Image (cartoon, rainbow, N blue to C red; front, side):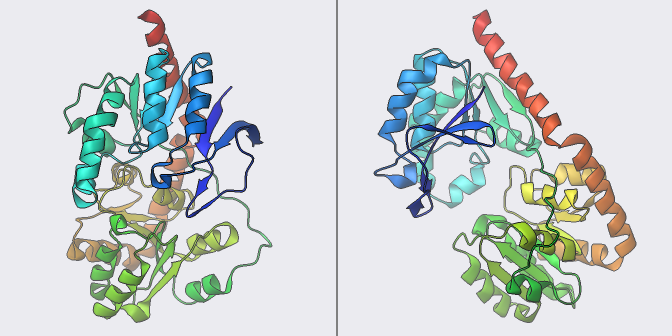
Length: 355
């Protein structure tokens, strides 16, 4: 049995959900708590009261993310009650990204709160070898670092579902390069734009939630004189719209400055798309190992060369896409990932019992 504790914070507003009582979400018990103040930190006194009252009844706590009040608080409460816990930093321990944004705040938070929480964790869970390397670079005395990737969902059926007009307009014409996911500076989408002048006639669709960077990318597309070949769809995209984008694409591109895993690229692989990525992306090692696309230098020249190669030989690209699909289905389905995470949980619980 697993219980999930979270807040009702949903962007600038709140989710319309019952508070402080469990609700069933597809067989999982989820309890939502209000965050009355300090919403960027997800501060929730009600959650703290509930954890202090109930945490001793659990065999294990799994904490997702750092730099947040609930996750730091949960680790401290678990230690107080001698309950083992696992922490998943979720890509938040990348030294370069820490230096680029809110450096002093993050370094202070790590020094005062999360370093101790991580060092006392039964395990720190990473999703790729690159993320594990980033965690190790801090030189902390961690008990155990385990790498278990995300699982990948099977594509949902979208037969008979209508496609939005903006998606229909975007996919009309030659198969595009697709970059799908949150539109933010960390995703390195400007790298793609800078490479595009070197790839004549190629079209690019950038689609996903706007993380405050879409307008900047539109301006850069004009600066590089590729705006006529670039479509930016800055909104939440799912269902038939998402499947239509993947189905229309010639290839998927992920050129992030850092990506602990790269789930959207795995979704593309599951849909038989070849993937172009860079070594900064965690799943690049899998693309390379499966020969499921191209891992290129994170420069305009390197990206352009990779795009040209994948676009020029469509038969070879289709074979790469098929190899990627086979790898994802075999090794990254949820059953396989659940078994590996269960082993992590079991080891953490047994380790506590041996003490």
